[in-house]
Length: 444
Image (cartoon, rainbow, N blue to C red):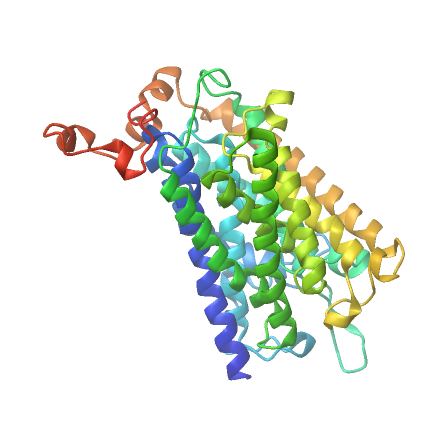
């Protein structure tokens, strides 16, 4: 066992775990005050549900040897059978299998949590829980196998344990989840937004973020945790991890600037929510590319993604779908931009890429592979998420009643309120303007 690599993977696992509470604050600040607890809970429950599913059968479906055609793993690791006191040994990695199991669990947790932002303000909590169970089982675990499960070979080069088709047959590059996490979640978010329909009053009524400091706090936690997400995917404390760490930093910085420049030109003012959203867009876009591009390529990918996502969030108004917190505009678009541009800027000089991208003299060979991977994951996730969403809606019901939506899902679904404003307001001590809480949405 390599103790240094093991320590890095375990630390990275903890960093990625932190991203889900970070996402909860990012999303929670964007909703209205009457929905903040529900938004936090929709994210937090993913830790519990997916954590159990992963132990029971999720890891086996994602990473056990291929059952058939590179589509899904077998059930040989049900209950994490055969993982204790074992080393991965694959591709030169010498870390405990359970360290890898926990690292990949954190990816499995945050992916459905990302979807929740598309249906904020209007979903039944336990219907959402049912969706997480079904979607993780039918969609995420198989797609993780496609993208992250690499063939294991013996010393003679013979495949002794087959992996997923995107990683091993298509040979598309996705270092940390541009397809498996972000395109996957973005496609599912679009499907559920269509299933549940528009919020009452959207788009005519203003539905501003109720707590902008929460949004920036969440984005900052995501940025911090994302270093584990991307650099940790090397599974080694090595030069590849260092490059992934560096490109993650510069791409996110460039994306923040790209988004703010678009806001300045389009709206005349740079916003705090825009800065936070731009940072997340950059993190999303660099995820598939982080180990395959150099810092210059990473900076370009970030800048393009920041500007593209800033423009893309308006698509929902043009096409009439209510993606509450811009899961489509940031994660689907950002993930697609990053996945495709990996085929443009990939370079073998990083030590991770097997061939160069278009701008590095490699032609279109890697680029078309990236496009096929993006389209395949989008189609699979969108269709199945739509079917699962419809099934839940027709059986137990997915959307709260109109009365409950007006009252607020915090009250109707959890019998709680995020803010006891009456108590502090009675003596005149509470001043929303000074607290960073939007006065237009508290209690709305």
